View 1 (tube, rainbow, N blue to C red):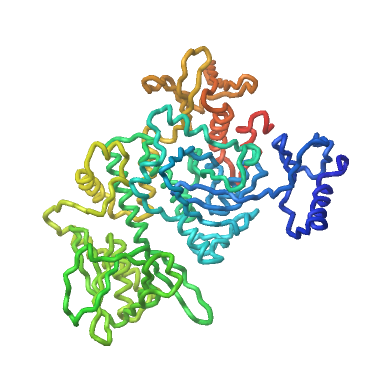
View 2 (cartoon, helix red, strand yellow):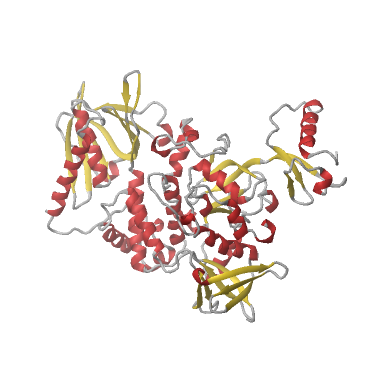
Length: 605
């Protein structure tokens, strides 16, 4: 066996499993793992002797792709198959290909923060979105309508997972937020970035086992070619990462900026919660179908005598998952029930549609009087903003005339309603004090401002900022949030504890997308800044684990890492240099060889 090539050895092992163990299965994904050397034997043309394998070696015949729990920036956890034999860089490419995340070079995997379990705490089972049955495609992903990959459109289950990926999830309870890791000092921030995995080594080589949990995060803060048309998942996950960086005080901002961030979160949350999804029309045997689906509309349903109104309060509203199809509204108890039978289906053909709007008071209701055998059913739909109201009001008006959303007059009807609301807003004279008891300030501002102000003080300030951005669309609001986030002074800085050559004390090195920053650990002041544009070369002395960098003007610096492997710092610097070359590349194909040359060090070479 030592003189036989590995591909022949794999065939022998497969035949043994079938003949002696009666295990008939697909063995094509299996390979040999050398346990003592922590190394995969993937060169099938080599013999065991050439690989250096001796008689006492322990070789494990194991799958190269195994289940992995993946924590996303939005707090959701996926369970999916990942490659444990390829370098992490290529593994992340495969994961992003499945999740429809463009530019996977911006992301990487990191180990989760170790949580100390208390005896009193009960084991909380996390919700897993299972994608283990989704194949890891080797080529580019084929997209269907709305940019959804084909493998997500195979079943309602996978389609729901994709919608979860592209929609911001509701904020957890304040008790759950309090348990999340929050850096208390710049020293704590240096520990965050020590958890990144080595991009040039495989998961198995770094001790990651089957069903372990890792985090998928944006590592390099240079976001290339961001297009909302193709980047629904990418945009949502980036927003979530930015949002939690602000809420957990990983990045500092002023009080005014925090109120604006809170207002944008509030607006985005309402837009996501009451988002209208338009599905493309399809034809089959001359039958047309279009669906207007809305996330958790506030709907109240009661029977009343003809034309007899009833006083309604916000507490009387119940929350349902609603779907507008053809000329009918179907509503369900929850999102999970939407594929079954609805609680009731309301046919709006022939109904009466009336507005119940107060723009100054942010009240957008639709009153429906639907014919019924016993009289008229009075139904109120409560919308959260002008855009949502305009879309549903137009749909209801068309349905009352027996017309569907395919009618050419739909967009003009929406525009007419928006014009009317704009006129009513401009004619509103007296300003009103904005209050909204539904605002959860704990999920909108960081703990620093929660301690400084009471919720009753935060709510009007957030609503005041909200008035300036209330007309933004969902995508525009997310882009605005990211724009303000990227404008913060400390945006995109990854911190490491280092000791510079010739110094007797530890300092902090900040690595940004265009510069290196030397920070005094005692007072937190910036001592010196070096830009990549002035960098001539950098190298690592792997024997003493020291990074040396040469800049223009005969400026040389050298440092060793205190709480991280110097390979992590070397990969950060090389990674940002690699990101700067992307604009020069005409092809969308990543130059993986160049990435490893810039980040992998002597092991990759």
